[in-house]
Length: 220
Image 1 (tube, helix red, strand yellow):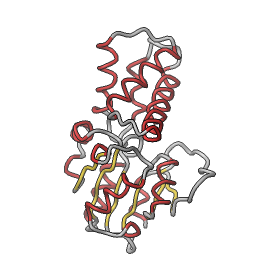
Image 2 (cartoon, rainbow, N blue to C red):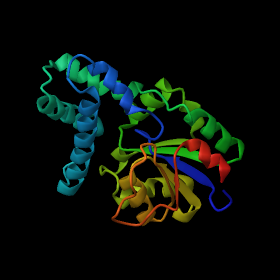
Image 3 (cartoon, one colour):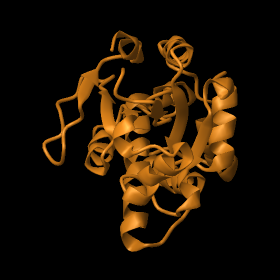
């Protein structure tokens, strides 16, 4: 893509598959898919709420609290060891099949790359290592630096500061519609990777492009 110099990626759901967590709860809850969906929804809700309240708790902590909520909702009996193990499993998620090739192709074309995530620095590093993606990025950026969560502008500004580029010269890629909208409002060239085939967001600025897999990034 001739009008950008760097690609910045969301992590969870964009590069790595948190849907794989359902296997941990097979036989423990009637609906493992529903459990993981509830967990993820509450995790994001807590992040947004913490930002609005100006009461920052790191993403690992929020993930644990969200697990407790989802467990209560779905009738899962757990102890501290199960809760902590489930929380830590977010740092061992597998990469989607399309990710390694797409990143390799972008870097072969000379683009700078980064991850920009709600995760803690330790969790981001562990997740990239577990997924075999550590060497695919020039930078791993965490919201911990600004103690706010996406879609706050201070979070997206971390990528501008890291690369020294105007927002319009950075392509931001996320599978989360609300994240893509927030990034577009910030001024990034935003690409929504709509893995789940969801309808577009009806609030905020639309992404510049919508794709189904990251392989399509190489077609630009």
